[in-house]
Image 1 (spheres, rainbow, N blue to C red):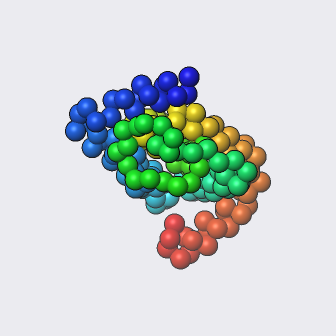
Image 2: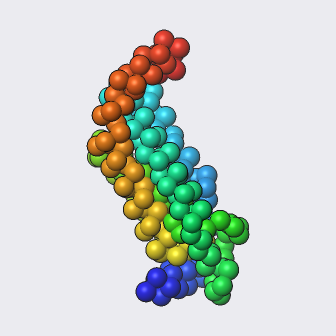
Length: 186
């Protein structure tokens, strides 16, 4: 099923130059992540202490998701679709493990943490995470289960951050924010 869904999505690649360019743009490690980080910067500098806590919790989730993916990559390696299959590749050749998708884990950790704390803003990040995930399949660098696995890791880390780590870090967050405000960085 994973391969069949991959073939369906990647089979659209190469048919429409405008669609291919849009998917390349969405699949990059720059466009969507930069947009997500820009939203976090905007939240941070909104001046609301609660939103600054949201940003810090999202960053805790982001770091945790990356650590989980890196640990998984040490024990499991899944080749990229273009390694063994005939695909329409519209992207560079990443050499790391295809599963879980680090890009999905990172973006979903931010999206879910912000959505849990501020649903209106979080919806935008969830849409970006979905678009980036689909685009990474479209351009031929991930299978659908790679994206789903990364998303589940990101969501799990965000849930942990918001419900477990965040409350325990409240005092640390308060001190950090107070210090950064004195330095005019918050």
